[in-house]
Structure formats: C-alpha cells, structure tokens
Image 1: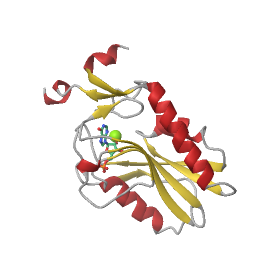
Image 2: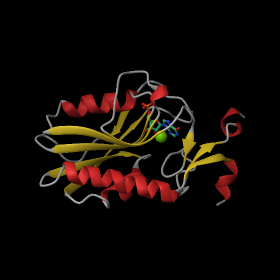
Image 3: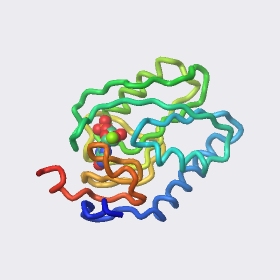
Image 4: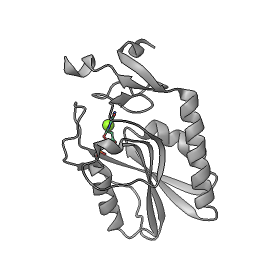
Length: 181
Ligand code: IMP
Ligand code: MG
C-alpha cells in the first residue's frame, strides 16, 4: 500500500493485532458471561478495532456509537473535548463498555466516562486497544488494555493523522517529517 512510505516503523502487524483482539474478546466474554452488555464505539478511531472486537465476544451484546473530538489536524490533544454525536439509546441499568482506540492524555475518556456515569448504567468499563501511559495529563486507567506503548505517534488500524492512514491493516509509527513539515 502506497501509504506505507510515510511509516517509519511497523509496531504491530495485522496478525499480532488479531491475536490481541482475540485475547481481549475472550476476557470480555468471560467477564460478561450470562449478562447483556452494550458496547459503545467511539468514532472514528475505534471503528476498525470495534468491528473486529465484537466478533470475538461470545456474550449477549448490543452496540451503539458516540463521537467526540479534541485533536483536529495535530498530533497533540487540545485538552478540550467536545461531544459531536451522542448515543442513540439510553444506558440506564445496562452493563456498558466504552471501546476506544488509544488512551493518551486520558482527557477524552475521563470526560466521556463522567458523562455516561451520570446516566446511571449498571456498570461502566473501558476497553482500549492501545495505551500511552507517558502521555497522561489526568488520572485515568482503562479496564481492558491491548498494547501499552511509549510516547510515539502511531497510525493505522483505524488510527489517523489528519483523517488519513486509517485503512492501513498494521499499526505503525508515522514518520515525523509528515507532521513537522
Ligand atoms: P486523549 O484524550 O489524549 O487520551 O486522546 C485520545 C484520542 O487521541 C484517541 O482516541 C485518538 O483519537 C487520539 N490519539 C492519541 N494518540 C494517538 C496516536 O498516537 N495516533 C493517532 N491518534 C492518537
Ligand atoms: Mg483520532
């Protein structure tokens, strides 16, 4: 794929990602055995991970979508989170898992979690494929984490830079010359 010319290094291949998604799905299946669970996809970054993850979960589940923005065309968070699309269904009394692509500063998820907690779900957990603990600007921990990575900017498997690179099947470090030009 042409886009790979901008990738400095592949961090996780699609096979490694598939293996990890399977593991996460298995853990969630065990924890929610016999329950109904609502999986919430945070658009747009988590969409690819989400569609793979739900197919690895052996439990009664329904799905919904939410969108918020904080980045714009930058590699650093603005620190301001905006809800741009709300859920279509009420979550009161439900077991809910928010599915996110990556936790960096933690600001986005802290905001979303607080907002959803106010709607009184039976339980509320967070599943993120990737975690960059060095980027934290607030105390926030996910419940199900795929890969923990250092402070590098990555793209692929749904993750973007300025809305591009989302379709790469692998996850790679973006060549810094792409965003320091
Ligand atoms: P946080 O509020 O800083 O935790 O931001 C999390 C959001 O920032 C994620 O949902 C991504 O959309 C974006 N993000 C953080 N790190 C990266 C990265 O390395 N590549 C692409 N997007 C990222
Ligand atoms: Mg993003």
